Image 1 (cartoon, rainbow, N blue to C red):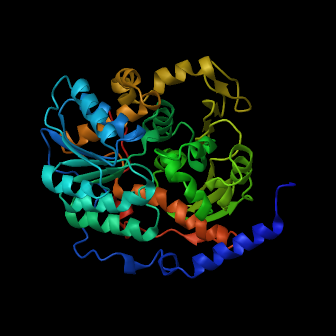
Image 2 (cartoon, rainbow, N blue to C red):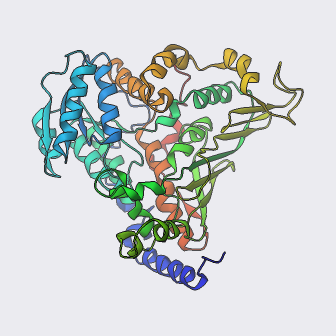
Image 3 (cartoon, one colour):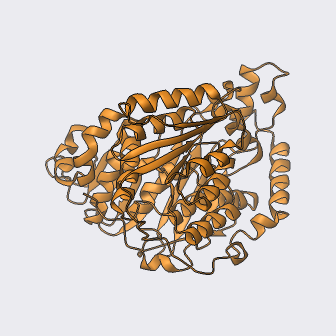
Amino acid sequence: MKNFDRRKFLKTSLLSAATISSSSIIQNACSKDYFVNSEENYMGDFAAPKLEKVRIAIIGVGGRGHAHAKQLASIKGTEIVGISDLHEDLVNRSVSSCIEEGNGRHQNIAKYFGDENLWKKMLKKVKPDAVIIATNWNNHAQMTIESMKQRAHAFVEVPIAVTMKEMWEIVNTSEQTQKHCMMMENVNYGREELLYLNLCRKEVIGDLLHAEAAYIHDLRDQMDDQKRGEGVWRPYHLAKRNGNLYPTHGLGPVAQYMNLSRSEDQFNTIVSYSTPAIGRNLYARKNYSKDHLWNSTDFIGGDLNTSIIKTNLGRTIMVQWDETSPRPYSRLNLIQGTKGTLAGFPTRVALQGGVPGATENHNSWAEGQQLEALYEQYEHPMYKRLGALAKKMGGHGGMDFMMLYRMVECLREGIPLDQNVYEGCFWSAVSPLSEISVAQGGYPQKFPDFTRGKWKTTKPLAIIN
């Protein structure tokens, strides 16, 4: 580890610990001072009144927001009424795409661009039923909260927020306004994830004991993008924070397999450790000039973070995050039970007694073509109904379209969303809690209960047709 400066590492760790321990926000991260809800209108199984047509406004139409705009415009029962972004050309591009995808159905789309606060004017002017928020992480909370205050349902990209204080404010606002707030965790709509959810609900792998989730994705090349896109803001998080900064893509699916925050079990504590921070600084020295911005930036976030969550029932979840190392993409997506194990990357299954027609026992994986019979028997009903269309429409293999379709479907039918506000906060809370744990040498951190005990009454996510 010739590039590892131990003295610098210890200094950085101590500085991080001092910063965290002096922060009143993090010190009181689980304090009840952060919620001021008086009516306690619990949103766990909340169903809003039916909407014959869902009028949608979109904040942020870069790569992610533009894709959402196009797909939403193609879904029956939607009307795109407003689009806001800093850049005029991005707004114009998305407006044109919405008109095209909707076959001329979306003709009166209000445009807002050129000022970072015009999204507020848009909300007041067009009065949407739902708002899609696809901006940088630091803006998620304020835009989500204001959208609900303006009487719109809020659908926000991951993570739902970056501080515990913001998460409590989101929960409070959702309850007080009786408006949905859903963090758009698209991975929960992947074919493999839906199959595994169905297998878990049918108890094919028995009682669930352990899960492994991750976001392993080398994103160093984002540092090249310094005028627009995520490279403008995302690398700075690694320069200021040390923990698991992006947990929900891996964690969301396994949390729903385990029924966490829904009647069966709940998040309890987390311990977290980070490796030394080497990769980003090396990348900067190799790829940029000595006087470049990135070579005057000290990336303190460890290259790899590993956290362990313990639930109320004693089950465990390993959650990893790494956007720096040269390794293949993975979300792990492993769920282990008393009768077998399901795993991802690649998709593979091991069952006690073997997978029928594929393996003789649990000592070998069934994968690839060997899983065809399992898919035929246990394919999620929603994927059977929407999978072909979703695959055609695209977006991470179709999971994006299926998520958006379900959001619109739930609003139009007046039924609960597949992900509630509390789940978005629990999954996102891993980030600030892991930062505290890392700074305190892996000391366990207690999850706050955003539901105030009412998760016990929330129905498990059903196998939706």
